[in-house]
Image (cartoon, rainbow, N blue to C red):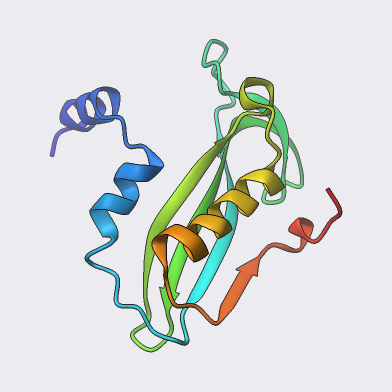
Length: 133
């Protein structure tokens, strides 16, 4: 695939969390021992000045403040087969939607339990989620 083809795909496709789930739901091999993992990613955009979602935020990898786009992902892990699937994500944009990262995790976990109905025994996340909101 060429660089231009990838850029066109990313520009033209709107990969919403709902579409992510639609694309993976039939591929997931569930297990009663399943794990749901929440992870925060900072996609660094150090040289961008006009991308509206770019904001200054703390990055554990950089051990400091960076410019980037924050994304909270939800991954289902089958420890029996050592497979994993991204099942949900949220863009962290507190100025745009007023939601904290904890709000996004709460919403995604609720969807895992009540809407997606995935069997899981364990929920894993970074320690910074262990806070009072």
